[in-house]
Image (tube, rainbow, N blue to C red; front, side, top):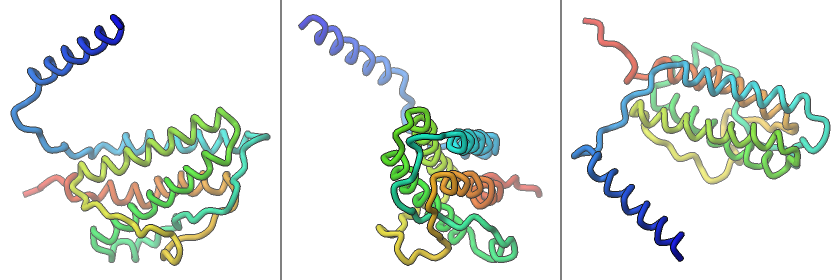
Length: 186
C-alpha cells in the first residue's frame, strides 16, 4: 500500500512541477527543416533491410501487401501542387505503416521485431515532422484497394527496400521543398 501511495505522491509532485514550468500558452510546433532527421530515419530503414537480408529463419511475410510506388518522374512531381504531393507522401507512409505492421505479426525473429518497431515509430515521427511544417493532414481511404500509384510486394525484403526508397525519394522531395523551410530572400 505504501508503494502505491508513494507513486501517487510522486505523480502529484511531478504534475505540480510541470504546471509551474509550463508556459502560459502552448507554442506551435517549430518547423523541423533539418534533413539530417530524415537521413537518420533512412539509415535505420537501411539497417532493417540489411537485417532482413541476413535473416534465415522466421522472417517471411505472410501475405503480399500494398506499397507505394517509389519511382519519381521529376517533371510529373513538380507539376503537382504541394497538397497533391503531401497527399501522395502521406498515403505512402500510411501504406508502409500498414505493411510493416503486418510484417511485424508475420515475423518470429526477435531481432527483426526491433527493427520493424523502429521503422513503424519512424513513420509516425515523419508524420509529426509533416505537421510541424504545416503540411495539411490527409487521411487516406480505409482500404488500399484501387489506390493509384501502388503495387503489391510479396516478400519482406521487397517491402523493406520500398520503405528505404520511398523515404529517399518522395519523402525527401516533399521535406526539402516544404514551404515552411524556404528562406525568404528579398
